[in-house]
Amino acid sequence: MANQFRQQVSRTVMNCVSAKAAWLRTTLLAVVLSGVSSAFAQAQAPAAAEPVALKPYTAEYTTTARGMSLTLTRELKSDEAGTYTLTNGGKILVVGFHEVAVFSLDGDEVKPKSYVYQGTGLINRRREVHFTEGADTIRSLYKDNWYELPYTEGTLDRMSQQEQLRLFLLNDPTPKEDLSFRIADGKRVKDYQLVYVGEETLETPLGPIDTLHFERLHDDPDRKSDTWIAPGLDYLMVKTVHVEDGKPVEVNLEKASIDGTPVRKR
Image (cartoon, rainbow, N blue to C red; front, side, top):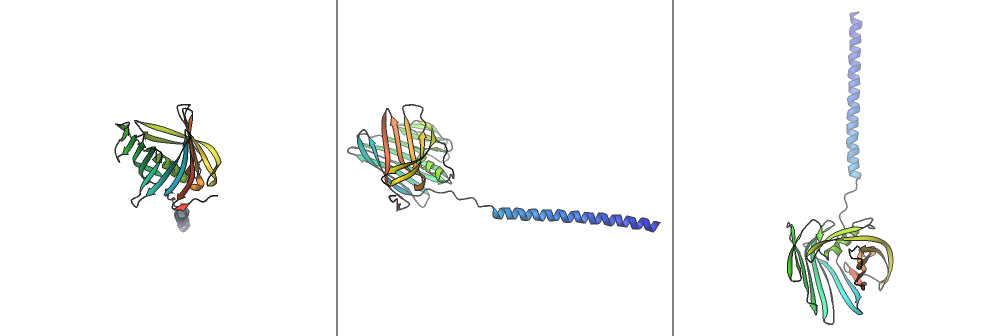
């Protein structure tokens, strides 16, 4: 009787040990497989893509206003330190202007440093906007007076905003959406709202170019601003039309070179 009892207890203990061992094996196997699965998933996960940077370019535009035609030259350059310089200007008879913006890039964000506009000839007007890293104000020169404007993250000047638009679109797989920008201009900071209008093909001196059409919203119903940008040309501006006081000013692309390669007629 005692022997039978001892055998039964022994079998029970062995069964418990066996069950415990099986549970341990199953648990360890699950942990190992989980680790392998996680490692495999990490190995298969695509690496984060590097942001697409801006390429240097040179572009010539013609603009017509009040019956006069003017050629504008715009150029974007960068140096080894990662500083970008964007210039734009033109002259007709005794009237002209030159503007320059200096900025750097942080991923897909433009970090402005300065903007200077200088009118020449009969319209000798100057504007400046200066950003200081870490400061909570922006210095702005407007009509010979300096103003301290509040700085918030992402604030741009009127020229660097144009390159920020391109940079956003270069890094956006679905760029057909409304966009907003905050601009330090004159004696105040303004919010620009760009509304996506649609796709349009424009006839240009470089042949037909597919573009994305954006319209800037204005508080004044008598003002209207439209921009057409070409995805196939690194989102270079192809055309702008600005209407104020019933007088339209139109700017059209004539020729361009991107990263040293001329854009050929299509």
